[in-house]
Image (tube, rainbow over all chains, first blue to last red; front, side, top):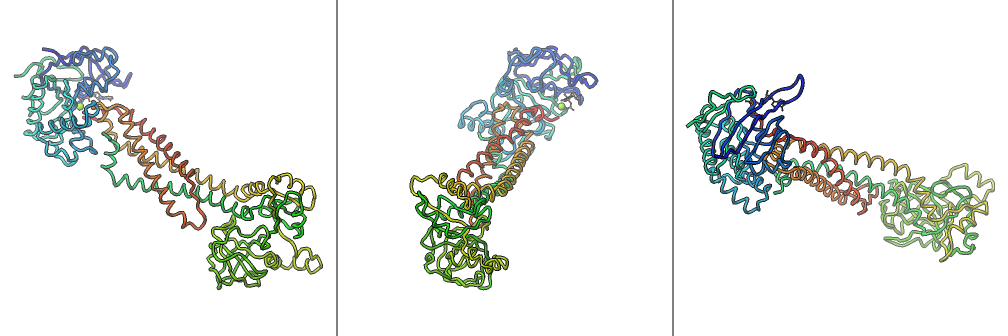
Length: 234
Length: 376
Ligand SMILES: Nc1ncnc2c1ncn2[C@@H]1O[C@H](COP(=O)(O)OP(=O)(O)OP(=O)(O)O)[C@@H](O)[C@H]1O
Ligand SMILES: [Mg+2]
């Protein structure tokens, strides 16, 4: 099975000298296509930092990282166009949905397709398709502020999926949802992972959804906790 | 997808209000420039009215506007006989208070000899002065109707004609009298000292004028003639160009500096206001900008969002402001002249200011870390 995310000795520290914080200390991790992976750990253990490194938002301090077969970091960025990498390969889902308030629900999705160079009609059709798939199609013309938390989260997922990314990163996507909605969102991510052969990485504290992960990793003080929940789940 | 437009639509009320505020500010800037243009135009109007090429005045003075000048009336004959002079006339100038039905009106009185150079260029209503005494032509700005009778000094005059838009550099409406009437008025208003001097036998002082104006024959050089007249010692001379330049420096200079300073200050204020508005608009969108960056929007899209909004703000504010002043210009107490060139120049300045102002927001926006969008 191909590994979509490969991390070797990946480390990140913020600041220097007395103020130095080692957020991640030399991490090795492989995440394969089609898998839904849970990332757990106490507050401040480095979960968000890890997500930001994989998402090419924050530059690692050391180590090596390969995304979808392409080495993107080996002591320095190997690729100058990180923006395109994010646009084409990575989908982000945030804890607070982060929809753009001045765009309609449909436009929130069209905008990423537009940025990727898709035509207008094409973008609209794809947005429609995604919204229907996520069962929020009837709200396409509304503003994000007119949606419930669960609806907004599903629109955000639709946006993350728009360019069919191979890697989907979600930081506490269910924190604002009740357990039923949380289950629906997780099932959806599982479906996408299976259908698009994508790797889905979910940071969560939410025990309600633990049973939806193919594997779970626990971060503690910047290192992976090898033993406990590290291995594959049913 | 145009993000700038969509964001504006989302907060339309706020945007419109901001535009209106900016429009008022830019309208004030434009009217300052218009007031200055009006001032210059009014000032030149008086010198240009006789359509002369040469002004002959008292020796050693820069009369009759910048300094007082008195010369004997018969200087006109001397000047008229000069080679190259086609036509000459005499003029008196003074400010006087007219009384019309108990209402006071301050007039700038020009005395001239009907039939000679120096009368009103065009009478908009009624007719020019035809009789030797007690007829007056006043500008419409005085608000005195045709046929009205008004008192100037101890005499009563009948308004036989009205001119349009003729004022002095102080904004006072012009009035035309025959030279004789004007001289008497001047003599009367000069007060006791001058009268006593005249009674002591200095009869010449009665028959004095403030300037002789001359129109030259084609091909004659005003500079050469002025040079020649100055050599006579008892008279001075200024060319029309010299007179206009003098008026602009002596009469308009201070106003120009004052208005210039004021305009510059207002422009600076506008620039600061635009910069602050654009900066605030950008700050309000920090999270959206971080999100856009995170999902892969290029810097170009973010810069576009900010600069387009700044330009839209400036463009709409400027257009509204210019339209407002164009409509209001005629209702100002003094003349406001809005030249297309001035409007265009201000538009260009506003565009530059908007782009410059948005750079501050752009700089900030480009430094925003896409990770800020993540939260948690
Ligand atoms: N930009 C930053 N500058 C300095 N230190 C940072 C920065 N971001 C994170 N850190 C530090 O790095 C460590 C890991 O932070 P991180 O946000 O990855 O934790 P987390 O596991 O996501 O925590 P939580 O569950 O509270 O979200 C923390 O000690 C944090 O204070
Ligand atoms: Mg976190």
